[in-house]
Image (cartoon, rainbow, N blue to C red; front, side, top):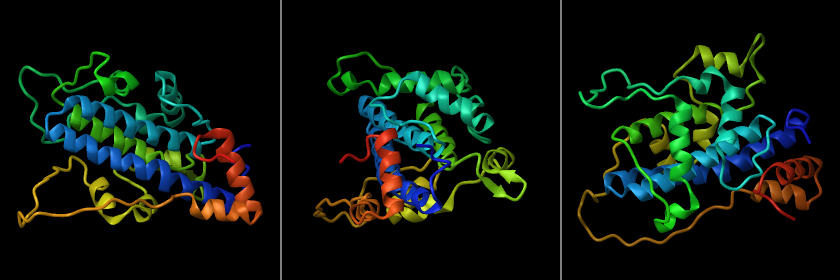
Amino acid sequence: MSFANLSPEARGLVERAVLLTLCQAAIEDCVMARISWEMRNFRSFGWNAGQCSEKLLKACLLFNGKSGNFSHPKFDNYKELINLAGNILCKPLQAPDGFRVLDDETYEEPILDFINRLVLLGDTNLRYRGVEYRTEVYDLHKFDELVFRLSRCLIHLDELKEPTTNWRNFLKNNKGYTHDHFLTLLEPKFSEFFSKNNFSFCPQNSDHKESLAFGSGKNGLIELMACYANREMAGIEAHKYLKENSKIVSE
């Protein structure tokens, strides 16, 4: 089943389900990657950075009619998206304006080279220190840039943005543009985090009081599964597309 051939109602269900499952989880992984970097736990940074980019990659592919039905991504999965997105993704990673580069370190790196290192950092065996890994001094900033670029591809790139311009060309010509509809679906704390590139995470509680916490998380598939259970055509279409092209849903 083609994403382009889905009804508008089914496409909306798919988009919201993907944003509230893969993309919400990706931002949580992004937060943990930053905390790990601040703690100098580079193994954990690598694992969480790899997980974050993996989920965003799958979401971008699903929104553009490609299969995200794989476990851990291979280099070719990223290459498929880069070939699809072109200039939105493929330019080398370069130091931001005003960023101070150390005299004995080089910042610029082809994005495929950085992704190749990220794929290795996301290796399953890294969880148990079963493989070697390395990070470089600017990897946090490069990770920020990759996440930002992937977030811009969370849309059907061939769909018209304006009467004569599709999203691919619009994003190419508007380099700082991000999609508000993604941020509005996220929990506020993650929306704020995601929208700040090179965000500096501070783990200290401002009042230094002991804090108690409990964990809970929303089911991002509630709307889609309700439509599917009620045998609504849009729900059936959306469920079929995600079942064929992802691991998000099952019977």
